[in-house]
Image (cartoon, helix red, strand yellow):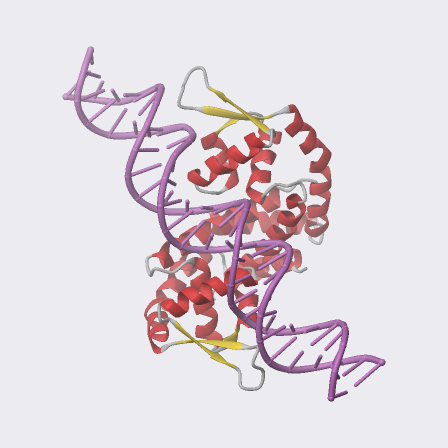
Length: 136
Length: 136
DNA sequence: TGAAATTATTTCGAATTCGAAATAATATAG
DNA sequence: CTATATTATTTCGAATTCGAAATAATTTCA
């Protein structure tokens, strides 16, 4: 192998999924980044800005903007950590919780339709291969 | 399989590569999208805006902006098609050609270091699996 | 202790991206 | 032929993203 065909295919596949998910969450009035932040909070509970950043894969300055958006929409709350006043903890509001429970299963099934083109064995294999090239 | 772990891993891997490539091409004063456009022209020769769009994976309105940037930098030329005056053909200028030949091999080797963590057999397999989930 | 380094987060201005509407040229159907 | 539909591309304004610098709190260590 001497070319970058694999990267082309990787970018294309990611782009297809990204567009599809973005289109779906845009109908909730959320950007993809906002939705990913909500997803993380939905699964992990309250997280600091830095912890969120490691999930959402955008620059810290961009995340500040995203958090502001979610706060304005009443989807998340922000509380400062008692022990370390630099840290701001983000958590879903009741409204945010409700939105995610109303929507998340549908989101999963829609994406699983795609992933289920692979056998379980193939899917594990794909994860394994992607991790190999994706680690820093 | 019932979760979206695979998508998480996919997005992460793509993000890692994207960041790395973007960082490298930013040093040439190019955005990732601009570089991808140049890459396509470097390999395929002159392309219409629509043909470029299918390579670069951004919205047509965004591509107009990217093309304008590249034109201003003297990296591409734009000529209208004789047969169909709607079509604008983009091609690398001599300056653009020179830039790409000076840079492209280094770009490939840098990315191949990553991809060579896979055996050739694994790489083919990865391509195959990604195509399965990535097709529309 | 207390100055210097580190960590967490935000602010700022600029660059990139988007979707929807506009423009312009070509193709099609009546 | 000519009105209509389709195709190729750009324009517009708004949203999102970025990197670098700023701010603020905590830790380190001399």
